[in-house]
Length: 478
Image (cartoon, rainbow, N blue to C red; front, top):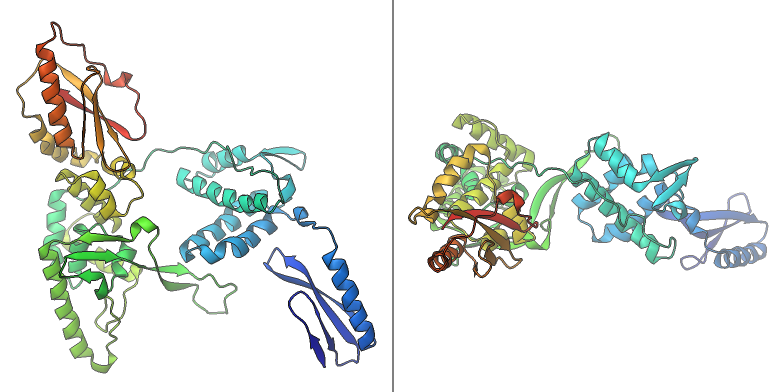
C-alpha cells in the first residue's frame, strides 16, 4: 500500500519488512541535475503521515543555501536546466565539452559565491584574466575557442546573477586574446576548372558544382530536400542541416554508438536563406532527378524515397564523412592537392567578389551575420591569387596617368552601403553599393578639384591612417 502525492509533497509506502517509508524531495542534486530525496521510516501509518508533515515543513522553511555549491556543480546544472531546452545539439555538445575539458578542471572546486573577478582559493589569487591568458599562452587554445569559453561561462553566471545567487558576473570585463585571422584557402581559376571538368565523371560531381555556384556548407547541402528547390523561380532555400554529432544521452549502453545523424535548422537565423540558381544549375538538378528515378527502378522495393536530394543508390541519405570520402576521390582524380570541402564555399565567395557582386548580396547568399564580416573575410586573397585579383582590378584604373596617388578610405555600413572619403580632399566623398561606382565618382570630383588648385595636396602616407574594423584603403591615381 502506498500513498502518492503531488510533486514535492513526498510519498508514503509500506515496505515488505512492515515499516512505513517516508520519502521527501529536498532539492536538486546539482552534480546530476536530478531531484534529491531523503527517506525516513516509521512503525505505523499514522507516524509516517506525521513524519511526512514534519519533513515537508522543515524543507519548505529552511533558508536557501544554494550559494554553497561549487562551479563544477553549477555549470552542468545550469546547462541542463536553463540552457538545454533552447540549444541545438551541436551547441549543447560544445558547452558540455567546455565544462568537462576546460572549466571544471581549473575552476570546479571554487564555490559559486567566491567566483568573483578576483578569486581567493587555496591561498592563491586566481584571476579569470590569468586563466584565459594561461589557456592562450600555455595550452595554445585558439582565440575563437577562448572567446566561446567566456561566452558560455558568462551566460551560465548570468543565470546565477538573475537568481540572486551571486551579485555580479565575474566574466564581465575580461580582456580576451585576439589572434591573427586565419587565412582562407580557395581554388585558383585553373584548379576550379580542372575540378569541375573531372566532376562530370563522378556520380556526385553535380553537388561539387552546386556548391561552387552557391557557397553551401556541407551540412546544408546534405540536408537539402526537393521541396527546397523552386524550379519555377530558380531559387534554392536553405532550411536545415544534416550532421553527425555525439549523442546527448549519457551514459550509453555497452557497445552503443556514441554518435548519431542529426537533422536540425541551420546554425543561425541568417543561415536560413534563399539562393538564386543559374539556369544551368537548375538543369543539372533536373538531371539528378532522372538519376534518382533510375536508382529507384533498379532498387525496386529496397529503394527509400526519402525526399532528400543527395542520396545513395538506395535513396538513403549520405552522411558527411562518406560524402567527404567521395569528394576526396574526386580531388585525387583531378590531380589536385587536398582542399577541404569548405574551400569550395570560400572559392564561390571569392569568385563572386572578383566578378563584382556587391557585398550586401554576397553576405545574404553566404548566410553571414553582417556585411562587415563578409568583407573582412574575403577582402584579402592568398598570395597565389593576388596576381589574378590585381589583373581583375585593371578596369578600375583606366584613366590617364596622373601626378599623384591618393589614399581613399572606404567604410562599410551594415546595410552594404559603401562610404568613400578622399582624406586629402576633405570636401570630396561619395556613397555607393558598388566599389567601381564609388571610385569613379571620387576620381571625377578629385580631377575637377585639382584644376582649381595652384598646388595639389601632398598624399597622406598610408601607414599614417588609422582604420576601424569596417574600413579599408584603396589607392587611386588623380
